[in-house]
Image (cartoon, rainbow, N blue to C red; front, top):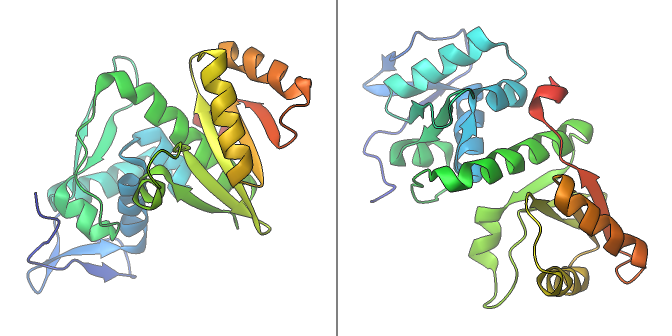
Length: 226
């Protein structure tokens, strides 16, 4: 599916427009709309509560943003996991409006826990250090050399390139060792955010002293950040 759109969105900096408002035949976008679309494109998709954290807005304001973007055809929303907030998923037009240039991505239930965890980690890192540049996995994939391991993101802070890994399950020892060897060669720091099982595994590896660049953290939750 082509990312091209025939009508370019207008970025509006004034008061909030009503959902679906158009000027000169073009859908109206505000700075916050573009911020949301860019985040969605870079991170595949996001839960509504994560977008509240991203924008610093309350639920009602975020719902207005999503209603406007949905009316313009830039996103769809769906309840993908029972008991969790709805997800916002960019359409091909939304990807183009966000300026990322990525192709459309279809949610798969088996991947949503990992997508959510990576979103939480990015929001956590950038809330603690707002000047940190985050390079998402989708950008890294464009630049990856054949055979390179792809981290979940790279944070650039104070001139240091930090490989970010988000781990929800325990991998084989051989696999983890190989990843740590490679990432330690390529980056200034390797930082793992882990669920309880892999946290124990990675903490033991960090204590071994074999990978002095390795840091291990518990998974943050956007609900704890708000």
